[in-house]
Length: 380
Image (tube, rainbow, N blue to C red; front, side, top):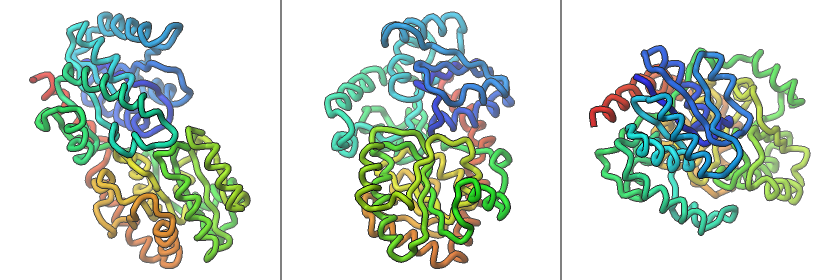
């Protein structure tokens, strides 16, 4: 089977990281995978090429029309059995291009979109959201089958895109346990030393780009409350700058947290950071699944996460991590303090969380499910 995977960018973020994890496993299953991307952004190209996956750039001069024409040309040249699109621009361009080239197309639904949360976001354009929704709706008719990362994403996006539920298959994200290794005291101590965080200072970690969706402002506000009980507590945030960066920096200054909150930018040592963390926090306002949540679970970092239906596939209950309502700094602070105050209970939850990933979310299992998804799509 030949699959052309079209994605908007190859930056280190959730959908992109999941593709990089899964592609080599698909190759081992006999799938010839080619990955093409539309916009240049430093990230994950080399990791794919290192394992023998061909990566094709469709960037260049011109706007969306030129990217569309280059995509059509690539599909006609490679003649894949199926085109698989992910992220909004790739979905729209890829569906149209595959249809023109008469090749079946499937699309991934990796987040909840076009709802009241997105329309109300202060960092975006309501008009832009509605335009993307209309284009997504129009081109969704060209898709033979959809893939969703969670059951909740499938249910919500089926309604918003007017897609029959029977045309959507749920295949979760996956991670490779061997790639991430195991949590150890030595590994955590080394990461703390490089960060300049003392061994006895409570370390709270978030791994997220600095966008409104990720709720980092809620986490910063919660840290001001945590510091009232744990004055030595530190928060480090790993992830690129985004549409909320200025607001976050102003909030840190206003709350006098400059010495307690660090924005690290993009990092290639996330497993080490997770090994060092006393608490891993995912404070998102909305999510698709949260691949980094699986990474935290693998490395037994005690979890505090927004209680979102889309995250319940990974963290179904509080035996695996503490869940709090989104956008509530007081509740978030209380959960962080609960983890710090009872490390033994936090460790028990972390052990169960790792076991859940090994049971349900290994990349080998996900690749097998994705291959079955492609076979169903071609059968359709």
